[in-house]
Image (cartoon, rainbow, N blue to C red):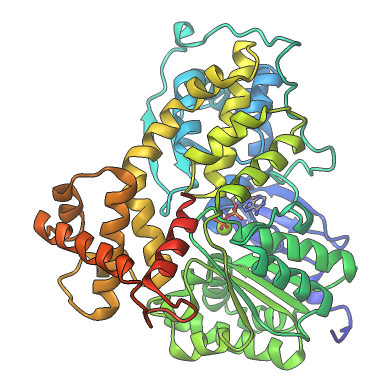
Length: 530
Ligand code: ADP
Ligand code: MG
C-alpha cells in the first residue's frame, strides 16, 4: 500500500447524530462527544466510529454523554452485576424523541428487559432527561429494525421487580467488561483471532487474513456475503483492527453503507462535496458494511463507483459486506456489481453442528464460564439459524444461572432456553429450510412461492418441500400453503419425485460442484445442521 501524506482535512471532523449530538474526532484520533445544537458544516463528516448493527443503530449507540448517563442511572438502580448481565455488550440505550430506545440483540432480551426492568428504565430515563419517556425496543437480529413493546411511563411498580440476590457460588461469575473499552463506544471491535472457523466460513476467514497480509495486492476488493448474524460485521471489524495494527496511522475509513449514503447526501446539501470526495477518495483503505443498503440509491451508487475506482487505482484495499451475492442485490447497478466481482467474493454459510458447538465453547470460555459439554450440545443441536442466536442463548443461560443461583445443568438449560428453542423449533424450522435452499440456489424466497415453473425454481422448490417434510414434521397442506398456496398433492408428488431421484442416484447439473441430487441434499442438510 502506498503511504500518503497526512491529510489535514481528515484529522478533525464530526458526525451529526440524532438530537444535535456531535462526535468530534480530535487530532489524536479519539472520539469525544459534544452535545449542543450548533453545527459546523465546514468540517467534513467522519465515519470512523461505527456500531454493530450498522448506522441505523448509531443514533442510539453513540449519543455519547446521554448514553453514558443513562447507563449509569440504570446501573445505579439494578446493581452492577445485574446491569452487567443485561445491559452489557450488545445492548444499547438512547433517547429518540419522546422515547427511551433500548437496542437489544434478540427478542429474548426484549422480553426479559421489558418484563423485569421496565420501570427502572423509565425512572432512570426521567432522572437523566428530566421528562417522562416511553420505553421502546429495537431488536437487532431482525432483518428490519422493529420498534415495539411500547410501555407508557407510569409510577414504578415494585411488584414487577423480583428481589434477586446474586450468589457468589456455585453460580458462574458475571462477565467482566473489557477494561480497554472506551466509555463512548459500546464495545471494542471484534478480532479475527476470535472468529471460530469451520467448513461454513473457513474460506471467508482465510480471505480476510490474506486481505490483511497482502493489503489488497492479492485481490481487491474482498466481498463477504451472508444472511444476518453469521459474522460479516465480525470479519470486517477484525480486518479493520488488524490493518490498523499492521499499519499504524493508516487512513482507514470503516463505515456502513448507510453512513456513506448519509454523509454523501449531507455533503450535497451543504455544498461540501469536495471535502467529502477528498476524504473518501483519499482513503488508504476502505471497509464498508451492509452495501446492500446502496440498492436503489442511484446517485449514491454513482458516487460510490467513483470512490471505488479511485481507491482501486491507488491500490487501497477495499472490503465490503452484503446480505447477498453482489449479482443478487436487487437494484444495484450492473456496473457496480461487476466491479464488486473483480476481486474475491466469499460467502459465510450457516454453521454446521460441530462449528456451532465450537463457537459456543469459545464464547463460554471467553466469559470465564464452565458450561458442561452436554449442555453445549443441547444448545448447538437446537439453535441452527445464526451465530447471533447461539450467543443470545448462551447469554440467557448464564443469566439464568446467575439470577437463580443454580448450577448450569440440563434442567436449567431447558428452562432458560425453553422459549427460544420452542420458537425456533416451530416457526423457524420451515423457514430455516427455505432460507438455506434459497442460499444455496441463490434464489429469493418469493420466487419459490411464485407460480413460475422455471427449472431454476421448480427444483429448489421440490427439494425444500422434501426437506421440510423430512425434518419438521409439517403437514403436507401446511407446506403447500407456505409455498404460494399450493395443494397438498403438489407437496406429496414433490416428495415422491425427490425420493425417486435419490433411489436412482439421479445426476444433476443444477449447481456447479454437485454431481448428484443426493450431493445437493447432503449439502443442504449440512447447512441445516442435521
Ligand atoms: P452479521 O454482520 O453477519 O449480521 P455479526 O458479525 O454481527 O453478524 O455476528 C453476530 C454475532 O455472532 C457477533 O457477536 C459475532 O461476534 C458472532 N460471530 C459470528 N460468527 C462468528 C464466528 N465464526 N466465531 C465467533 N463469533 C462469531
Ligand atoms: Mg452486520
